[in-house]
Length: 59
Image (cartoon, rainbow, N blue to C red; front, side, top):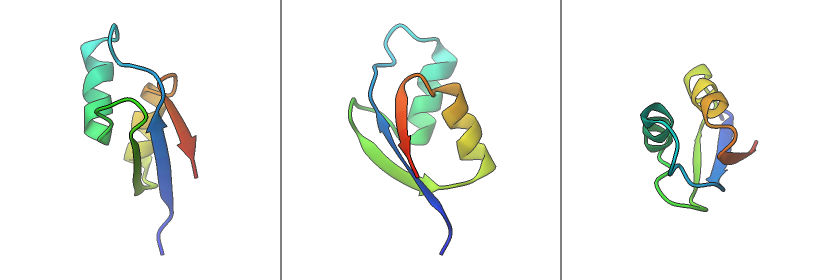
């Protein structure tokens, strides 16, 4: 089975740049405290690095 990453949005994207908000939407994080699970790929890791100050990641 492939590795997965679980992430939860813990801070709001309000006041962030359009790129940051678009990255959150691209990850599927649209509301506060929403938790999602995605495959652990380099693309997802890059997006998480961009919004690391807004999300909590569990592996």
